[in-house]
Amino acid sequence: MITFLKTVLIILLVYLGVKFLFKLLKPYIVRFLMKKAGKQFERSFGANPFQEPEPTKKEGSVTIDKMPPKKRKATSTVGEYVDYEEID
Image (cartoon, rainbow, N blue to C red; front, side, top):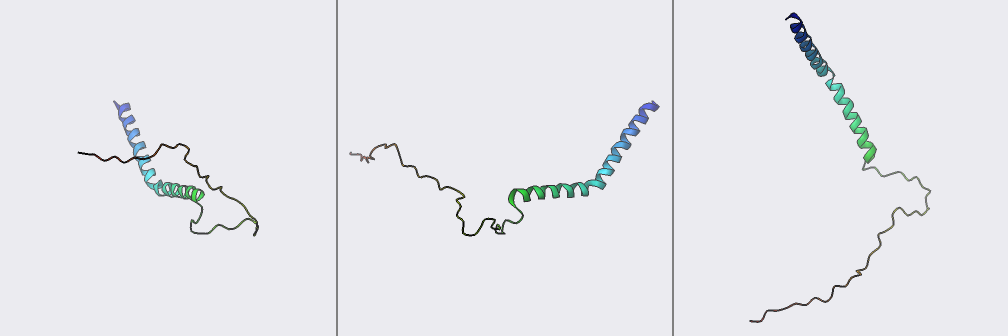
């Protein structure tokens, strides 16, 4: 009976200790996670989305960043549209 009480007391003390430590460390954990998320966001979208990117290429050089999409012509002709009227 005494060993059962010791076991329950140890489990209760460990639970309360972990709960207390988590309460103390929660601000630091949240701050760490927020910094990590901020760095991830900064890496994805850049530091300041409103700041113009600095030109890294020599002025006057011509570069093509993206080719315009080619316009496709309609290859299949369905036919002529005919409007029918009902006659009574």
